[in-house]
Length: 367
Image (cartoon, rainbow, N blue to C red; front, side, top):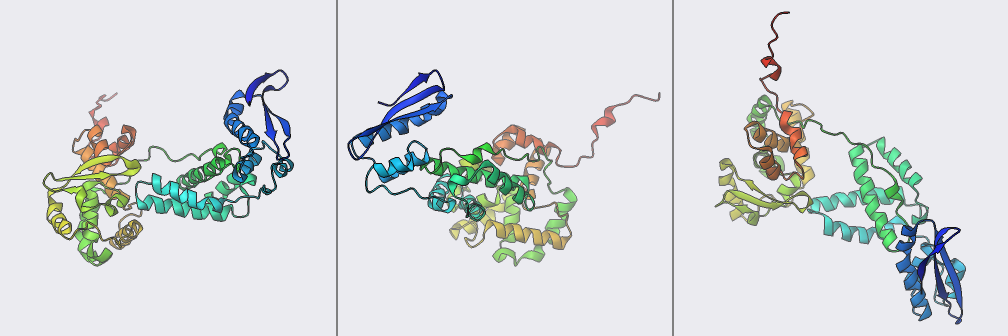
């Protein structure tokens, strides 16, 4: 029976037997200086030993053992006439498993769609490289090429998707370990002060909003007002259903980013429009995509001559910043915004300009 033994020469080893189709067996050893590595392989080795002894080893189990470098190609052919030589596998073969995993783990369909976009990029980048030949060096080159066109944050999202992709390959036995987990994520900007609307910009924006009534099937004004008064993310708004709205409580109950449940209050100005939409059994027209909202917002800002730094997400930043400025406790704002930690909320404490300069309290007199 397969077991880990102490080896004076090479640290540790697993001794086991591989039973062949002709009734004989081969004595096998797997050595390593790390007992942890052997512990990870012990289950696979014990399974191969038991199934080969019973002559019940499947093609899939045999190929997995081959990719784990537990048996050779020659030994594979000796296990039975139905055992085929293992072929190279490629990233695109894992697509169905990746999509299933993404759909199960994504909080919204928009997040799932974003994962599929990343998968398209990865499939194209590694289409000519078999899974066994994808190395940390290959991934670093991919990272360097992407850096010419996108931000570090986007590259890190790509790398996280690749890690999930290759985890599936490990589980299937196509590769022994995940090379993407040896590549470090890039440094991302930390503690940037979020860009929110300043009071004069808000006044300018809402004064001109009547000029964009035709945007987003006539929903543009409602969407903008809804986002700034609730702090919801665009994907959260697009996934909102009438049953999430509790008008008698003036509350919105939703599952946000990371499946985090939260409750957000409803400003009085939104109630009349929400009543109509609930009666019509929808909040936002299903044909409106989150990216369409961002594009419409950007066009509107450009026509109003507002700064390029303002994005749709600035509405959420404004909601959070103004709550903090009005004296709402940071812990409560964190819950309303759906932040995972108070440190994220703290970034907003200086987002709005202030007429008060704290240093004015200093009075050293004339020296």
